[in-house]
Length: 102
Ligand code: FES
Image (cartoon, rainbow, N blue to C red; front, side, top):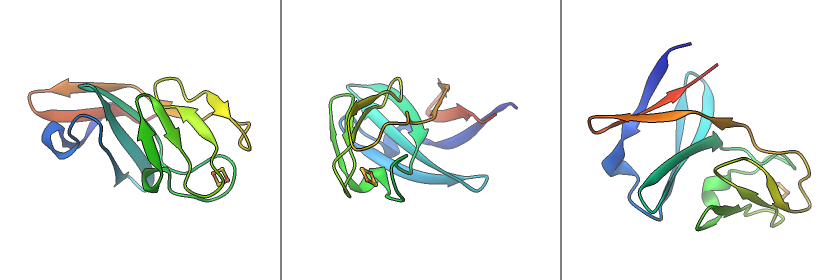
């Protein structure tokens, strides 16, 4: 699957995160000090939108029960979630952020 455009880089400034629904998939885009990461936007514990949680560095905290994930790797940092988040490869072309959707 080719890379597809998600947003402009200006839409997600450093320290911010934002949800985009691309091809029917809810994606969370994070900007950590200028580095972009993309994960599935829905928590792996129950159904909560992670972009309504809190981003601190590379750690996203779920707004529902407080599970924490590393947005770069998808790894669970703290429970109650135990399944990692799906992550997606990203690239920046010009001012566009693109994601590799398998
Ligand atoms: S839904 Fe995210 S921790 Fe429960």
